[in-house]
Length: 499
Image (cartoon, rainbow, N blue to C red; front, side):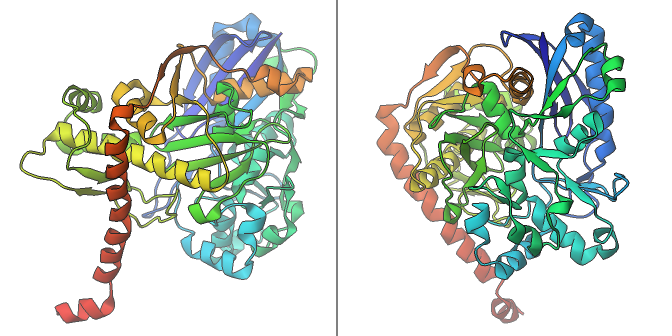
């Protein structure tokens, strides 16, 4: 028997096969049409592109591994979170999907929190423009003719599930990122829904991520040579699916993701919100489990930005920084190129270099960028600790984890060992396949979600601990000072005095 994981990303879809023993058997991908930005701060995509890419990825997998695909008994889904697919009662899409990185709904966030003062207590999270509910509030205000026709709101993987099974179902980890879920109770909140003019009839049915959520349609099963009932699991939002793939499901287990954005993820045995620190507190994809995330918006994207303005390859920049590394220097970088979530919740924050001199070169700037991202992760750990969460060893994932210096900086600043897994794919597609196995076989998620073999462990550099604590204190002092200066610069009285 085999199990299929489908990971729906903004740039494409990945299909991943595992066997009964959990070992990978094959994978295939298909690209989706890139998101469009019709206005500054907007980000939209056509949901039909996910479905086209899903069919194409599975078809490719079947062409390469026909017998293995035909033996599939369970399917799990992973997908990007927080957006909004609006469906009419005939299940037709009403408008382009509003993506997680769309920032148009900032005003609606403030309005929602004023209308429901206990919103953060119920949702466990701050109302942020990236979440689903504020986007619907924006549609209600600016596109009322579309709002009136909404019969259902689905996240990406729930929309793909609808087309795979005919069932409108969502699971807890993705639902927690809508701002409509009572995260502690693991159920839709009537109060949160009412703030945006919706009710439970607009929501999909809820299941746990490791539970059955429908069966594959017969015509699709025939298309891929599958026989019998093929169970489709609840699945997981992308970060929870990655945690299932890496085996971070027990309390204190977690990972640090050095991708375009950065995530410090830790699994919890209970609901532990810290909205004051802009921590994301969500349900995990398995029962009676929650997780927290500190999220930074520009991780490797910060080094990519430096690469663009210096004309040097990111790998060359990180290599030069490592070759000349002597510990913290004068240069400090605040990595807020796209604003910041944890701990500031400030979409208007901007990146800053401080301490530049005639001796500053691209290698020193690259080091400062890597240190700035490490400090941003240190901020995340600080507010996770404030919520009563302790971190154990973290597993490193993402493209930035190829840089040993970067991982050493993060390990030193988090005072935590960083483990590098042996070669293999431990992302959302594997996690989704594991959830498909659990749903089809009734397997215990804790026995399925095992951690990978570890290739090596990077320990904190104790010789640099104090130097980086001092540098981190300077880093933390810069943000309020710079924000205060920006606010003063935009003061109308100051503008008038300049004239």
